[in-house]
Amino acid sequence: MALLSDAHPHAKITWVVNPEFAPLLRGNSDVNHVHVFPRREFRGLGAPGNLFRWWKTTKLLKPDLALDFQGLLRSALIAKISGAREIYGMSDAREGSRCFYDRVAKVDRRAHAVERYIKLAEYAGATVGESFRCPIPTGDPLPRFDDYPPFILLHPFARGGGKSLSNAVIEEFCSALLPTRVVIVGQSQHKIEPAENCIELTNQTSLLQLIWLIRAARFVVSVDSGPMHIAAVLTANLLSIHTWTDPRRVGPYNPNAWVWKNGHILRVSKLETAKIKRHGRRFKPKDVPAIAKLIRPLVPVDPMLA
Image (cartoon, rainbow, N blue to C red):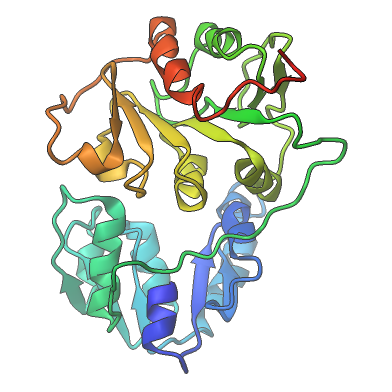
């Protein structure tokens, strides 16, 4: 969005977003208005009334241009309902969403998601230099949590099947990184029995508190997920674990970060030339020691804990 704001400094930009992700836009000077899409309210007995009220307010937006970065039927319909004069989308859009576009930006479907989004922004007049801004809120500190002694943040959960780490792997991480603190975050229904050096904050942090923890952590280990992409913006001390997903397409967009795939640990900058299998395997306890070996020089043991 920063690219579009820089290209059109006098434009009024509205971002349509799910309510759970709206905190990411807190304090973002590039966005003039946040329009919430409360999809959870479109279920149950009250769904028709809620949908009608949302439809009425969305019709009033009437932008000159709507950009569909999601590329799904739902997002294309939202653009259409908004009354946009023109709708731009990408050539890899799915579910028939391209039928709603006035112009289509040709993208390489094998390219990284961020690069595909940049192509759409360029179609709308944005100019991309060697780097670009990606504002992230500072976050909210957790009550009764001190960022000292140093800690490693572990985000082991994701909605996609086969992405989440098992309890055995989580326990192995805690054991391998002793005596350094390991803070476990994310959303999960599984109960974890943390080791003595682990702080279990599963289901206990807001999105803004999670951002604060990412900023405060000395290193972040995460499965392929939204929090991993936030971490990639904030730090290069990140390792992203990919089971069946391709890190070249959906991995961290930070050349200095690390990825794990099929038992191999690579810098993101080396992915294009690396020979890695597209289809992967689950992450196992035996894979933890190699990551602990990578992290230890970057997060030395605090003398007060040794």
